[in-house]
Length: 286
Image (cartoon, rainbow, N blue to C red; front, side, top):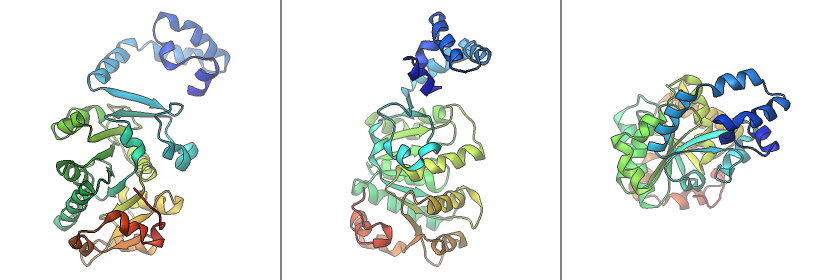
């Protein structure tokens, strides 16, 4: 529809209200179902409520035709890039890149400790942490870097409107240190499909990704990492020591780059580590 609106020199806002009839007729002439569009636009009360809520949380709607839309999504995902992003916070973090830190919701204390230490190190070295905001590794990574005065980009699979007013993010949003984004409706509940779609965005927006823990051949972390290895969106680093789950070892066998947690003890220079690794692209990342 966005392309069709552009073709008739209109935008989404022109459909709302009594003045929307000419735009509606223009879309109908372009082949869109007039009756279905009319029914959708008739849900005015629901739309007004949503717009009021979005205004309160300063939510922006960025479509794929906007200049603010992340170029990485267009370039890496191509036709799979979402047509619309719902964003709360600074749009700058959407285009900045960073290190994606991902892992299972249910994991052990060693994994969470490693996650917090790595995220804090990212804050010290001005590397943005990108994650999914879910309980466990994702949320630990985001909160740890924010508590260390770093920056975080959270790509959510559900409940953006609720998370945008939660206590854990409020002060950081005010400071411009965190951005929350989703390709789903801001009030959408959790679904497996939305979570899988969210994983693509995390990898596509990052300079590199590090898997803290993954269940073997099951779960969102596993499937997201495998898809990234297949599509080669970004280098995949995988934590490996005697305590890591079997899924981590399998990801390394598939092409993931092993990372020894002991390296954090030597105050790792994140940029230098990636620049020195030809299997991580040998590039100047972040």
